Structures are given as structure tokens and as C-alpha cells.
Image 1 (cartoon, helix red, strand yellow):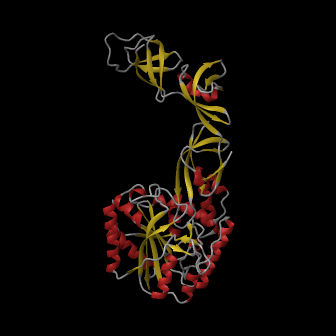
Image 2 (image 1 turned 90 degrees about the vertical axis):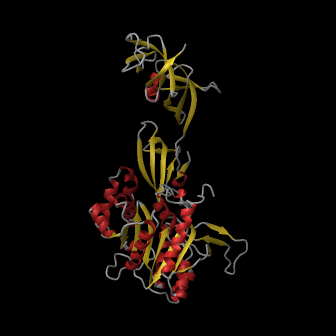
Image 3 (image 1 turned 120 degrees about the vertical axis):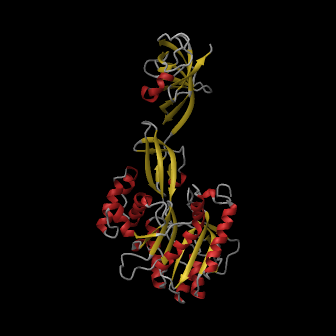
Length: 313
Length: 189
């Protein structure tokens, strides 16, 4: 397994070397965390207060903000293969510390980047061509409902209530994004063909994360996700470049955090400053490196592909 | 009783669901990269014995159940209750027919059973995996049959009926697997 892992890292670097994408390695400890209410930073205390007065440092859940600051300054294609850390995540597909492959392509839209992810899967896992489908079409095909309309979401919620395991929760769930996410995980994802990578595009605006809103259809965003062999593998965006819109998304996340009784997070002012200084039109994607290795090795659990899991670390 | 958050869920944890004490059999955390995390949980209801699946939103809390398991030896039945004793404290615990249920036919005096108690009252009695019981009734077997092909029904001293090989006779003691209700062997007296 260690040899296969080493070989995989070499192949990734070769893939990007051939495409003239520069490797970067940004910090793991940052003075800022993420606002996304479904991600939790682990924190640590530095002995000496920094110039900003900060002592609490956030272990990064992804190198996204740091890489975007490099993009704003450097303006060229970059990739990173590095460890990231997320609190509250442990299970068959989760270890709190894991390896993420993240890359950004300047001048690419999401469609071009989807094609490149697909090429990576062909080269590294011998995968067949990726099947691309919109989020809306997934729901129509499998549940017969439109997730972009209020009545559609209500009907989807009803379908979830009919699942005995979900009755209690879904009878009282009012949040549209939560309803759609649970329906997607429990009623749709499992129906994707295992042997073909599936890329789901045009996530609803409420789940845009850091993706641009579609110019022609403001109900959806230019966010995409890859699923392969029952594994959620990669998440990408046609990247949001507008600092005002970015600030608004930070605010919305913190509003939602308040509603969920979660602590709010300070917004990363350095990312906002970088966007204000000018940010290239680009698309980026983050892919779970360990999960890719799991697929290639047909591993049942992430612990099988890690040198040491958190239980033995 | 304490409340447990989904992050504390693990196999064997006792929680209340639908007014019934339950034991968690399996807990799987599901966490989309961007989105609400949840726990897919398999739960055994300790009174009905039913195993159900339930999905909890991560971060939710559920009430714990005051459930303990004790190893107690079986004493006697007074017609209404089956009495068990703690061999260390000599404390006696009566279990009713609902708790004893199917275990009744495997209860042998002095045998150590596992009792599940909810709020101090027995809700389940688990007999030992193997018990030794005397045959009180069975048809005489065919002479010379030692292969045990087919077998025949035999009634044991507790009223349990098991299939035994043809050569086994009334008055003999046999070993039975209580989980399957199957004959294991003869026991030399």
C-alpha cells in the first residue's frame, strides 16, 4: 500500500508537470478559519501572540483561501497535494487528517475543468469517460421532482418522511438545503452506476459554496461534484471572483451559523483583500486523494490506504 | 439519565427511542463534503427485540436509557416469577414472564444467565449458550443406529423439544445450543 501510495503521488505530480501547472505548498496553520457551517476547524494555541494579537491558529480544512491569494498575485495555474484537517469527521470515508489534491486552472470554465478531472480519473484509475448530469436532472430522474421549486422541495421532503429511518427528522426539517442534501445522499447517490464516474453540475444557488451563480439561470451555481464507485470524490467551482459577493457569502454563512447555534467565524480579510486586488477568471477543484487511492485499490475503508489513521497516529 | 450527542454514538450505547430502551448496533457517519452531516444508525429495541434503522442529524442529542446487564444464576420459579441471584452480593432479582419469554425452556438451576435490567427491572433473560438437560420423553430408537440420520423429537425436563439422534434414550442428559435449539452431544453422567 505504501508503494502504491507513493506511485500515486508521483503520477499526480507527473500529470500536472505535463500540463505545466505549478505545485505550491501553502500553510496548514492560519489566523483564519472557514465560515462554511458544515466544516469545523481544529484549532491550536501558539505560545507567542502574533502581530495581529492572535494566538489561536486554525488548522486548514482546505488550502483554498491560501491558493486563491497566490492566484490573485501570480495569476497562473497551480496545484497542491497536501494534508488538511477537519474536526468532527471520522468514518469509513473520513479521517480527521487527510490528503487533498486541489488545483486551479486560469481561464478555464467549469466545463473545461470537469473534462480535466475526467482525464485524471482515466489516467490514474483506468476509469471510463465521465457521465455529466445536472443536479436538477438527478432529482427528476430518480424522484420525479424539481429541486429548484418550493413545491418540488416540499414533495421531496414528503418522500423522505415516508422513509421509516427518516420520518422523525424530516417531519420537522424546514431547511431546504438540508432536505435536498439528505435526499441526494439517501435516495439518489446510491443509484449512480458504480463503474462510471458521474459529475453532477449546477448545484442550487443555496448550495453554491464559493461558486459563481449561473449567468443565465440565477437559481443555480457553477458548482460540480464527482462521484465514482460509491464515493464522493471531488468538489469544484467556476470560482467566485467578486469580493463583494464573497463578503456576502461569509455573512450568510455566519448568519446560518447563528441559527444553528454554532460559533461564528471571523471572515478571512486577507482573502477578501486578495480578491479586491484583482482575481483571474478561473475554475478550481478539490479531490480526495486518499479516496482516489481507495477506488484504485478497491479498499473498503480509508484506514486501509493511510500509513496511520487517527486511531493509530 | 444523561443525554448523548450523535458524536458519542457507538455500538452498545443504550438510548431511549419511542419510549423503549434500545441498544445501538451500528453507527455510520455520513458527511457530504459540503453539507449536513448525519448518522445512519442501526438500533435494537431491547423489549421487542426488533432491529430498526434510524437516521439522526449530526449534533442532535438523544436521551440515554438506564440499562445494565448482570450475570445472575437462576434459582427457581414460584409460578409467577423466575428468581435469579447475584452470586457475589446474594441479592435476588425476580423476572416476569415477559422478560423471560422463550428463555424459560432453557433455564437450569444454578446456570448463570445474562439479565438486562431497565430502571432496575429485568426486561430480557439470555440463557447460557449451552445447557445440559435430561430427556423425559422420546420414542425408543432403532437398534444399531449410530449415524443419527434424520433423528427424532425428544422432550426435555424443562419442556423444550429438540431433535435428537435415534440412539439417544429417555433418562439421558444431552447438551443443547440454546441459540439454535439444536442437539450438540450426549453428556456422560
